[in-house]
Length: 149
Length: 149
Image 1: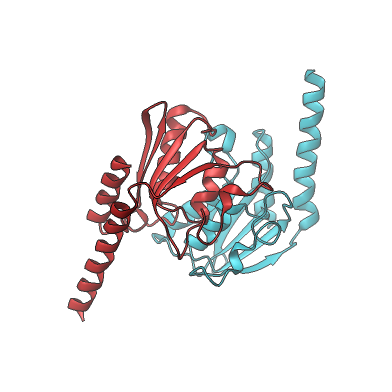
Image 2: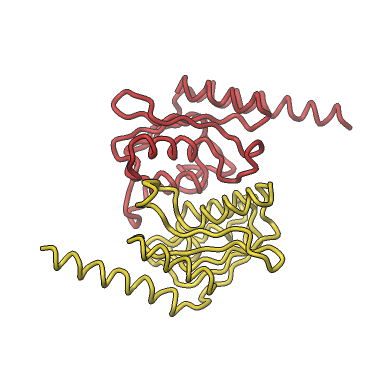
């Protein structure tokens, strides 16, 4: 999660909402990602999708059932759905997202036995740090917007 | 939807589950995609995500609020979530997906007023044709599996 936090920091430095993710298999990091929606002009450029795409390319497989994804923020519906598509083994996330989270907040997509895959979930890891980087980003953003008026 | 069906056919010819999608803005096709999960070894290679990525690159924007996405099959949770992330204007789909559909079947993600975007939805367009191409694909697949035994 420390590595995911460092990636989130990179996103923040680009002016992106600071979220970072890593995919780990057998103790080795096989995928890294951070939010790049604005710089890529791509609505799919969330940290999780970037990390999953890199891991799949590295492992030459769309099945990541041996993998754990660490991400600083609770995944949205798109990213939670992607973890199901990837048959991910385990998800570890930091801060909750009460407005858009799909892993306990608004939905619980990874624990739906109607779908063909469920994912083991651990939440609240480095929750304070993962939340703080987001909070600091939005405080600074509001400060800049105020100064621009 | 006829173009989406042709793209689905291309997927089927590669041995992929035949699903196709196009993104249209002002009468012009700006994104095309078909399912390439196996050939790309990528769990994110669904028709809708491919079409959205192409459209965003072409329009140099992650906001597709003027766009309509046509897809032969009801989107899954990942793809429905992606339509929200892209602030898509309108979705038109063909066949329902009772096992994994997130636009009316298992979930109704595009009509959730807790999320920051809702999408206009039209379903059942060329439903028979969109369903038939999938049904034919799975019948042929089962036939081949039987012959291999």
